[in-house]
Amino acid sequence: MASKYKFYSNLMSQPCRSLQIVMNLAKIPFETVTIALGDHAKDSFAKEVNSLCTIPCINDGGFKLAESIAILRYLATKSSLIIRWYPTGARMRARVDEYLEWHHLNIRAPCTGYFRKSWLEPRNTKQPPNQTTLDSLMGQVNRSLDFLENIWLAEGDFLIGSDVSVADIWAICEIEQLFLTPLDPTEGRPKLKAWMERVRRDTNPFYDEAHYTLWSVRDKSGQRSQL
Image 1 (cartoon, helix red, strand yellow):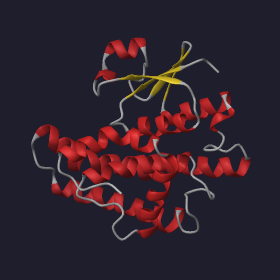
Image 2 (tube, helix red, strand yellow; image 1 turned 45 degrees about the vertical axis):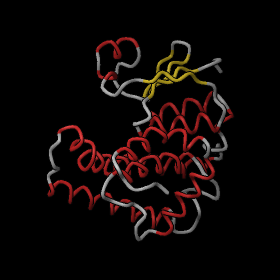
Image 3 (tube, rainbow, N blue to C red; image 1 turned 180 degrees about the horizontal axis):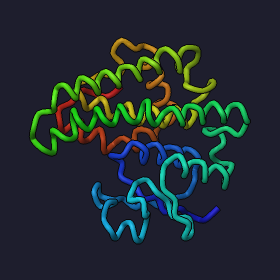
């Protein structure tokens, strides 16, 4: 393994938070390069860092890679440090990968869409959101959260197996941002609430460190407290 990865990140990004938590838990050495939101879309960033113009991304001795799940799998092939959170057993890894494949369209897309329309865009534009759009997105988020409550958390304390894994970390970082919005993801979902408390407990202090920026914005906005 290289002595240090360069990790291009902004902690307002959910995948950036997920990847940072895992790398810290696994004690993978990295140097954070904080990118202001918007700067990753600049031509200079595309030329020098990541042609896809996205964060997170890494530079491993000249090898540049984007997309948080791709980076996770790359790190797992290079080091055994991450095995505890991304297990190597064929069936356990398949189950984790099953969640990660499901995650993008069923947790990330609806949660991010609702977060943007209900909180981020009104904050930037000073205009109220379109209520019809908001209601539709809220319905999608609630369906996805109910799926977590009733399917993924039906039988265990974590999404996969009896211990926290990258599946839990990628999921919770998407859900945490909802506490800035009018939607409380834990309301009426006791399993989800208890799960969030367990994941935070088992990934601290790195969970709180990764969410410090998000919570600072929330507190300045006068939003309710996190778990």
